[in-house]
Image 1 (cartoon, one colour):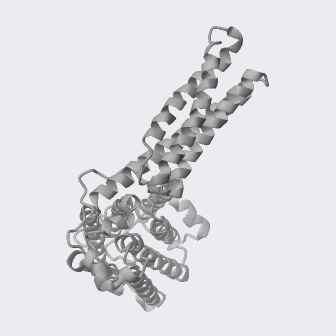
Image 2 (cartoon, rainbow, N blue to C red):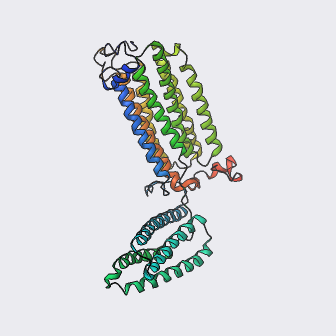
Image 3 (cartoon, one colour):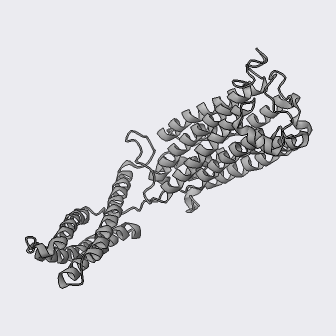
Length: 432
């Protein structure tokens, strides 16, 4: 049972599967290890759900800070941002008008006035649909004025109906009609403003793909869940414990490999050949690193420094894509890359410091028996893993915000020479 000679007590002796399960809610020398990663698993599951709903909201992430240096053509980016905000407002108005239209159908009978009101609601819903489709279709500028004229005529017809209804505003019989008419009139005026300010360069909002973020979050969840299972059931028996530790090592490798995916994917968003090379390379190395973990000898306590060193070496592979970006790709390092890099440095510190404490059993080697229940190197390492993974998530969100709003526009100036060198101008599928 004694894996760490400096942890003298708190062991669960004689526990089988049911007893080990019950021990989750008991105090022993694995309690902190179990709960730190069980809570971490729940945290990353919540982050996965949040990212999923952000991806399907249709509007992407929040607007990046105004002071960011992104490398994009400023005037073009401003047009894209304006078109994106305009489209978001249209989508919101479409939802509001549909709600008003549904309420009208429930409140009004099939009288002539009721039918007129339903027609008005239909017209306004149709106008918002046309405006939204305008950005999706990406019409040329010379067609915009023709579309405006058609939409204005639709609104003029709706305005006439609303004016007739206003004549009955003092008639109690038409109380509900007048209320709905007032709401539609407000929206009609808003739509007139939208038509007046239709972007001449309608660039559709295209949020960056989320799957690299999902890969990382799932990898973090696998690591934390497998670690929780391992520390819960490692006391069942010698053979069972050996299997649990293999599960734990596999989870660590999964976290390290999947951490590369969002950073490499979004930083090399417009350099697909390099992106594929790095992602395939780290995935292959991760699979190779898992092989020794299945060897019985590798689990001996004397190999703790070697285990830590193997996973640290795998994680340090991230130096290569970062080095390439900073020194060979970017003319000016974009602000989001700088901000994300600070989070990545903090992440690396947490992982390396935690691995160092784990490998050299600090602080329990200084005072054997006093860190049995809480505060030993493994406890600290577990907490640092959760903190490091969350720091990496924050860095990922910075990269995603950058690509969500600028896509390859962000590389327009910064990668100009690199595109020529890499022959990307003759390869139009730069973000395949």
